[in-house]
Each structure stands twice: as C-alpha cells, then as structure tokens.
Image (cartoon, rainbow, N blue to C red; front, side, top):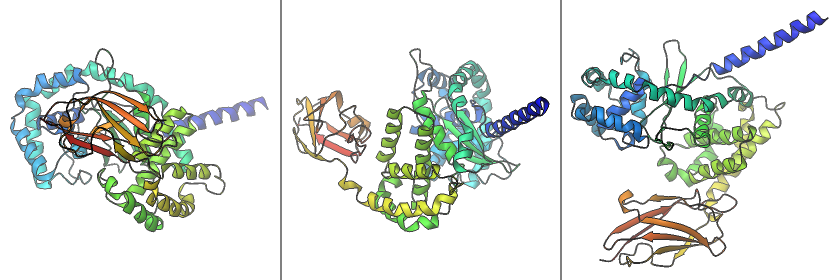
Length: 461
C-alpha cells in the first residue's frame, strides 16, 4: 500500500513538473538582443525622436561616442529617406529587428514584417545595413557592453521569475501555443514595443521589447515592478484573447463613436481593436487582483486605463470576476462571450454618458484660457473644478505648442476641499505657454478622471 501511495505521489509530482515546464516554455528568459540594439542605434542616427531618448544616459553616451562619426553613413541617409517617404518609425523599426537572423539576413518569407517597409527597398536596406555593421565596428561596440547587458538582465530576472504563466491557462481555460520573448532594449527610453513573427516551424513568437527609462543613483538601469509588470502582463494577454467581434458590433460601434478620437491617437482605429485592447487591459487588472497586488497599484492601473479612454474598464473587470466565480457554467472565457456581449450594451450607454460624470474645469483665476496679455509676474495658475478631486499628486503634459512652451512649475497645491488646484509657476515676458492637465492625478476619489485639459496663453512683453 505504501509503495502504491509513493508511486501515485511521484506521478503527481512528475505531472505537475511537466505542466510547469510546458507553461514556462511559453516565456523565454529575458535577453539583450543585438538585432534590437542595432536597429535602435540606426534610427537614433536618423534622428527619429522615439529612438533619441537619453533616459539611460550611461549607455546612450557610449552610443553617441562610438557612432556619431557615422551619422552620414550611406545607410543612415537611406534610412532617413524611408522615414520620410514610408513612415518607418516606432514599432516598424522593431519589426525589422525581430525578423532578422543573427547574421542580419531576412528570411525568404518575411510576411510578418511591418507594412511600412517598402518591399522594393528592403533588399537595398539590408545590403547597406551589413556594410554599416562592418564600417561602424558594431560587433566590437556590442561586445564591449556585454557586462552592462548582463547586469541589466540580472536586474530584470526577479520580474521574469514572478510572472505566473499558469494563471493564463487557468483563467482563459485554454492553452496558447505562442512563445513569448522578453527583449531588454537599452536605448529606447520608455518606448515599449510588441512585434511578432511566425518562424519556419510555424510557431508564433511574440516579443515584448522593453525600454530602459529608470536608473539608480549611479546611472544603471533598474526595473521597478510596479512599472514593468503591467506591461508584460498586458503583452502576454494578447496571445490568449481570441473572440468573434461580430456579437459586439452594435455596442462596439457606439463606444467608438464616444471615444474614437482619443483611441485613434493611440493607433486604435477600429472599434474591434478597441474592444480587444479593453479585454487585454481588464485581464491585467484581474491578474493583479488574483495575485494580491497592493490596492493602490490596482487603483492606479485602473485610473491609467480610464484616462486612456477605456472608461468602462471597471465594469468589464466586474464581468471577469463573475466569469471567474462560475467556471462550471463557463469553462473558458470564450464560453462567457455571449453574456459579456449583453453586458456591453450597458457599457456602451455608460461610455456615451461618461462626460457627465467627469470632473470639469469651471474657471481659472489669473486669466482667461487663451489670453495673450497675461502678466509675466504672476506666480500661480489657480484652476477651479466643479467637484472635489482626490487631492493627491499632479499629472501634466505639454500642450500643442510642444515641450518648449511648458511653463516652469515650482509646486502644486490643493485647496477648497480639493476643488481647486494651485500651480506655482515662473513665467517669462513675451512667451507663449501651453500646459495640459491629465486625469491620472486630476480625478475624483471614485477614479473618474478629467479629459485632458490644455491651458494655453501668452505673456505680455
């Protein structure tokens, strides 16, 4: 009897280890990839703003020192023409990177390459790229930084080890055959990209190219879990979301009519894409709740998604909770979709009426928005809202005039039961200014955020 029990226990352990191995094989160990580094450097040299961040200055200074003499290399001139004529930028650059092999060749079938790459120009680009690698001594640069790359990977490993891949199989009720890769990009600042490619074995490889934008006291990159984990959880969810959008068409079109302008600015140009993104983002919050993330982090993630236009996100998360509580009736998330489609009828109405729920700016004390004769010696911009805000923190962006028109902010305080925000500023005479208030901090205690509100003005001479 003891022998039988021991055999059964051993079989259970082996089965558990096999399941863990299967799920772990979905998530490949993080690495720094020379293809990503090369393409990032090339499009830094072209002048693309998204590839010219210096958040990880310790590393980007090395790039500038080594590669500055090659800013007018024939490859860089050719790449600039692709930027100008075909819009090669952002994720299109990373799409090229992950389609290359380690000798910087493209496979015969590169159908997953981003469409912004003109197929007639790909061959000449690759030829010049290989010449650039040789002329610029790229391999020598890459090898000289291997210790830095290894340290970055080491700092990322606690996050990698904390990702619960089994949760995805359990939550969705189905297994994804995708393989998920984490690539640490050293020079892309806060730019994160999610390209994918199907390899010759017909395996769909999903890449999360993670930027480097936070550093420690000595300038080395760090990866705060509260910033990084939601991004990774998000990208991994994409591999499992697979539903028929047609049952959501009516409500989806109604939602897009309400938030489509904001979604289009994020490159979500169709209602079906928006609903997929909403599901992915709600699943991130569900993951966080199931793994006992601090309430403040869950609230922050929820508010972030609301400010991005997914104003129904809390209601969608509630539906995912209902699904999770009745897995006997709904063994997979796809089996819950008809019920979710019914719920979306209410989501659409809620979204259409959401502006009436948002807090709104009612007045500014020192001047009228758009004034061109503002005194440059004023020390505050006092903004009044129609209801109390949460009263913690502040979130600003520059306005339509760009970063150079952002006023110098000295401090930010709340008054009048958090209905008033007092922004301490220093202004110059004869200058145009623009500042946008964002909903990440300027929101109600319930999490309802203001629409981005731009204050623009010009000071008198």
